[in-house]
Length: 154
Image (cartoon, rainbow, N blue to C red; front, side, top):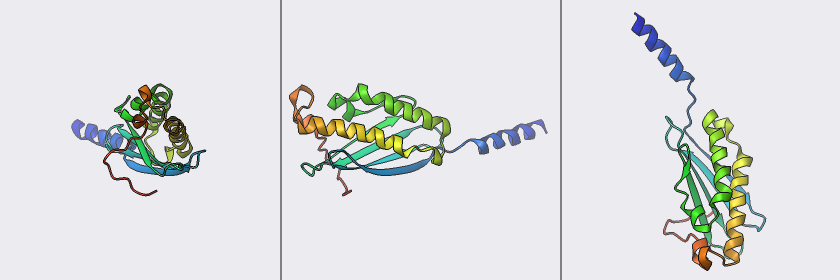
């Protein structure tokens, strides 16, 4: 009998636990006129594991660039940030945003303006560096993430 009460109580707690699963998207234009979009994906409904992807089509040369950051308690695997030397400036914004998200884990808690601001700041930073041809160590290719992944039109 006691085990049934414990089981019922456990199930009621589970039903109260909010699900973090979902995909949220948004679009914006940078000050330079580049069209960008962001997508936030939580690929694991049972834990806090978010993936934030931003992609832009440069207004200057029409080329795409994109970057992403995965967050599982701490931001990691942010290769693009690291390559551009932009990590220190933007890691804390992403970490703080996802920290807030992990506390709520509800679809209506997605702060669209906050994500747009993070992506917009990063995009402006990358475009400025790229257009000035100033990648890390003076290598402009490091600022133009031209991977083999097929881009879709915005």
